[in-house]
Length: 584
Image (cartoon, rainbow, N blue to C red; front, side, top):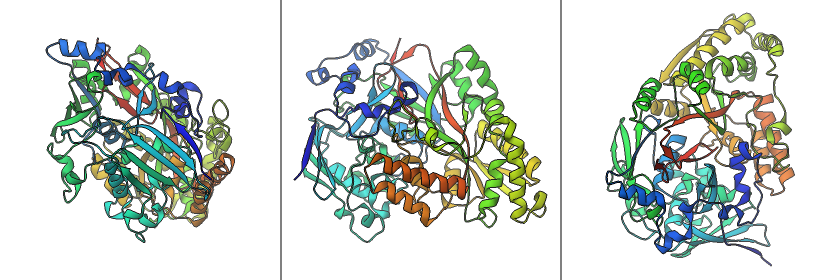
């Protein structure tokens, strides 16, 4: 017998865990409510479908000159194919040009919460065999940017494309809860066997192998957004041509001047077109923080994320710099297949001598918190909202108390000696890889100095442009590399399942059957306490036993927005939304 729960709104209170640092956390469990929907902004109001315009849209139209917004997130994106992107900057752009079954909307205070996207409702049914069936009903009037109808079949195609190993998507595992995924991913089954099916143009059915507590967030994640089969098939360059980069989101690509900017314009076929703000949004592509700040100060840019490190204290003190919550960890990644760093004793020694307090106080300087583990503070544990989070329950893997730093260094030197390099004698010169940016360079220099002074080893620094860096790190062409991970949803799984053997984002080339078993155990149960027990055991293996990573700090998100711009909203997953902004 099936237990069916009908959900009339996809805006779940649990999802705002992601306003978490500001709201004290949230629950990733299955909760049904309309409260979040009631708090969404006018941009999501049903009056849109009745043809009413908000003040923002009317004012912009009346201005004559239009409203053109310029922002800078990063340099040239590695990919803006929803299935192939794995970076936050690319995800922000994709969020403006595509839309999933659910989407992030403003809660009225600048925080993002989940609401209906391309689907207007869903039903969730628990089946006798333990599987769970989601049935999504598509919204009326949804269209691609060229005017063609968006159908449930577009989602079926796109999810099967994501799971298909031929696509080589780093984020293919994002839908590993879908029945049949494992067999498709390992190549033993045809992608058509994946349990997602368009019943008709308006109805999409997805069967999960277990009751995934964060599934409503997965369907708002860029990798699960639909793409058009006729644009994608047989065209590896489809994202580079305005004629083929067809999306279903609020904006559409107008121009891509490589290494200069990507400009998008309002999509006249979007169902909420009347409420959109800027006529165009230009994403400037820069990696020079000084150039970003100069462009912001001159008014050429209205939003920037990155400032020169030396400027941070002054802008923070003046109140011009906003520091937003950010669910993420900045860390050092070791190549576990490298001849030197295959030894966990060496990896642990390199981690222990990092003076995390020095880095956050004197280098990064944006209110970051020294990291005592990999999963950051603010991520839900079984305790639920308002109670201890995963980091508090998991505790500290090493002390970041300044008084204990020398003790950490003594332990590190002993480990290096056990590995055959007393006082660093005979240790070969190794390389630290980072992408071009002022803050990454200065952190690299600080690490280089700590490893030299405390371990007696020589580390050279190598910086590369963003795209080259990402590819080399992914392929394991490095020894030590800068890394950072931002949550894709509020659950420890987003930080821990990426280190599964052969995982698409497993840049450490790490493999441990015991670790994999804990991830498997966590994904095999819907019981919160059992899931968290397995995840804590996995983090113990990753950090305490194998020292695969050296966490440095838990992120904050510094940013600057021009005083005359309002209506931007944000989720601590790192996504900024500009589509409903207005000029004061």
